[in-house]
Image (cartoon, rainbow, N blue to C red; front, side):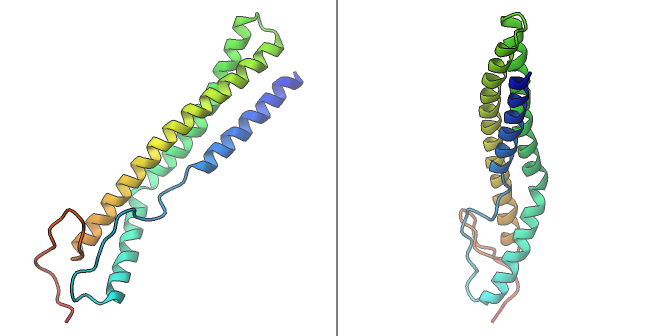
Length: 153
């Protein structure tokens, strides 16, 4: 029983550390330039507004990545413990071994799923940021510069 308790503590520890690896995007990974003639102070204000807009656009995706990683690790450990019990007729050493193997597999799957969700969140963040900055008349890579907009001269 002590071994099972150690496996449970290990499962919680790995889930917690896995959850710590997942984070929301901290900023855009694309370069946006102010259009010609726009004061830099105005550009900085627009950048701040658009970062807040993009942060709000990805809140749910970042939270989902965190939950998915922790859930995958916990399910993997439970399935591993069950498999260890079934294979060796319920002896406690095999339950612990099965839980350990399941924990590692579950943690790996959770990390891969979380990384995919994190990449998806960064892409969504970048798109929301680009849309916001483009709507304010800034130069966005791959898009023609907006023709109309307020004059800053």
